[in-house]
Image (cartoon, rainbow, N blue to C red):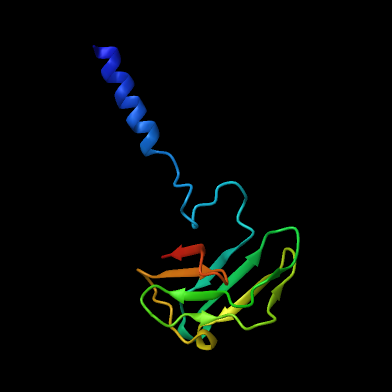
Length: 122
């Protein structure tokens, strides 16, 4: 009887730890190619978000968004914005239209389809 209970508990645990194949934000089969490399939260005049392209090719960021979880208005990266292989681009908070709090802040990066690519939290 102990073996049956142990087997059932193990089975429930394994099923509960399985990733959701239907979740568009779950992608463990390939490495993150574009991500938030750094965020400068202060001083206010220097607030910025730096995005890095870690992939093997240029990435078109047209229509991608950078947002602040506490602000409903995300910054839309302009059409024609391309990030070359290994390159970084810094977006100033004044250009993006929101301030970055010194603590308790979540910044997100979404692709043109609205899928979550990366988040940063301080």
